[in-house]
Length: 198
Length: 198
Image 1 (tube, chains in turn green, cyan):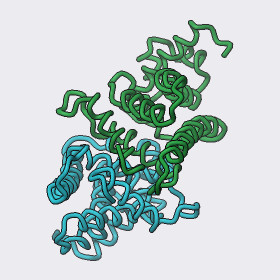
Image 2 (cartoon, chains in turn red, green; image 1 turned 135 degrees about the vertical axis):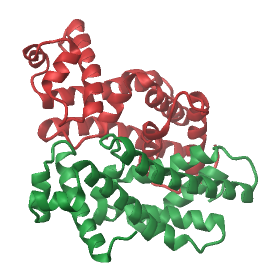
Image 3 (cartoon, chains in turn red, blue; image 1 turned 180 degrees about the vertical axis):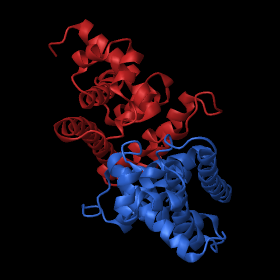
């Protein structure tokens, strides 16, 4: 990236605020004027920073993938054992989804119908990269464990993503289920379903 | 329901077509005129049938829950064994999600931000009823099986819903994963994760 750190931080701030507006009003329902007001810029200033409404949505999704990369994937990079690496990825990803701070961004990441053409393809390529990373880890874990697997790595990866990404539909940080226990329990559940042992 | 069968069928036809328009353009992006044209009614005719745009969205969601009730829950009603009943519910629900016919309706069912107030509450009550049904079956299966469970019935029910509802994000009927195998494999995976045996 040739962006300066300042420009990057400004863009991220815009993304966070715009994500909240999109989350509340929907992509089509939110006007650029409303977003500019929320961010504290003129409409012209907003366009200067992000180019177009489409591009803003793209930047929000891209930011969502950056957060996954920076807060989860970078941290498990040095773990050699595939099983431990997968476990820490699951726990990190759940942690990311359930903490409230960037929830709007996570939700918007999965509303991919609003983004079209080349930008849609770019985001999908990043998502696919993560799915391949999970598939690869799962297949290594299966090979290491031996025995019969109930699911192909790809089908297992999507089951895992379903469990994790569905959290935003129901999980409440103030509710009776504590975040750390939930992440451990889901990781155990996934490994037991996959391998027959947790 | 005091609706005649004719009115009900007409309403369902409107729901199916409108769901496709909402799916393509988003709830805010789709105009009542566009929906009327797609259905083959005048705008006044459409309003006569469904009252308002909000109410149309509600009817689509309600129809989505009706389909679940009619094609899945009614069919497993007579199964006495909780484990078999849960297995057939899982298989039926997966079947419902992956067959293409009503996919738009399924997707819209989970975009609950667009619906507000009393209508939102009514749909949420129907969804909650289904979640309680799953929780109840899961807790019976756990009791029957004995042994230590990794997940509380509620957390397990949401893991299951995540796996199933995420299918619309990735599953392609023409792809290499066959529907019947997928449903069996996911049911086995869920039971093994839950109980330690598939």
